[in-house]
Image 1 (cartoon, rainbow, N blue to C red):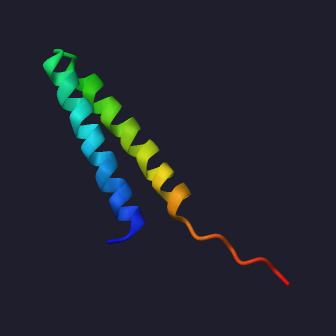
Image 2 (cartoon, rainbow, N blue to C red):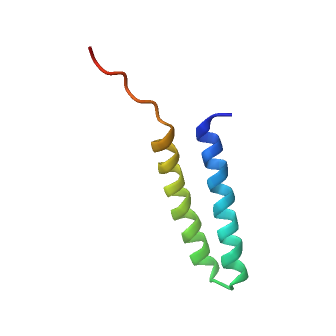
Length: 59
């Protein structure tokens, strides 16, 4: 499994835990969904940033 996939799976687990905690705290569902979408976007950007390959230096 690639580093990108592992990073995203970990991020989804964290997001799921936070969303469940917000649900247990009786946060409005619309705000839970907003938080999930924002965190998922941040997770994708972070995964791409941390797992991209560097361009080889030009000679």
